[in-house]
Amino acid sequence: MAAFLRVRIARMLIQGAACVAAVMATHPGKADWMLLGGGEAVFDGRFAQMTALIPFSGQLGSGFVHRYSLSYIEYEYPLEEETVQAKSWAGSVALGYQIPVPDGWLGFAVGAAYRDTDFEPRQPDNPQQGTHVVAQVDLDAGLIHADRWLYATSISYTPRYRAYWGRGRALRRTGPRSFLGPEIVAHGDREYNAQQIGIALQLNQVAGPLDIVLKAGGKRIQDGDSGAYGGIEFLRHFH
Image 1 (cartoon, rainbow, N blue to C red):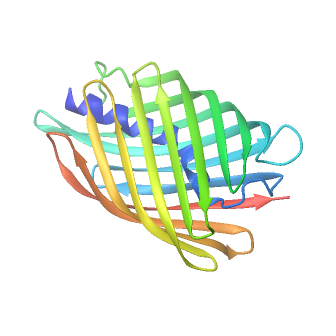
Image 2: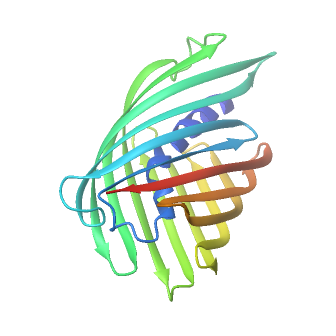
């Protein structure tokens, strides 16, 4: 059961990644479209994500958008006297709507994700084996306060598994193009809960319109293991 739950959470993290990387944009309404993504290594797995966010008309930050994502994940878990290794690819399409917010942003998205998962050795009793299509719902919001603080939150929910992923950040400006502060992540379902606490460093306009975030901290699984995580996120605007 524990191995199955870890698989659920690993997939859910990927589903949430498409919207949570948007916290890097301090002015999301000033681009025609954007490319965002990143990767994270955790003591019990790792993943990478790439997403394109495109408005139906006009600019980002107001109105309907369409979003296309690709992701890859690897993870492993013990099963009896052996270690099971998994590799999984996914693609998703979502329809979103962005609401203009003074000095901030607010967006919602609903879509479907297609995932193909292979185990070594094969696990015919694992419901994640093979290909699946699941619905997902995302929310992303943020606020820049007094030009000193950047508050951001992102939530992802998968109804099929009643699985959730949520992250909040409170970053303080440390320079003309940098923010630094804590982040808290919580994810789980009816049978599983885990938390991550770390530090995020956001660097805006590192190279032209490219923004990046570096993050690191610790993860704890309720009644289970604990360890470190680290990762990088990026966002680039296009006109």
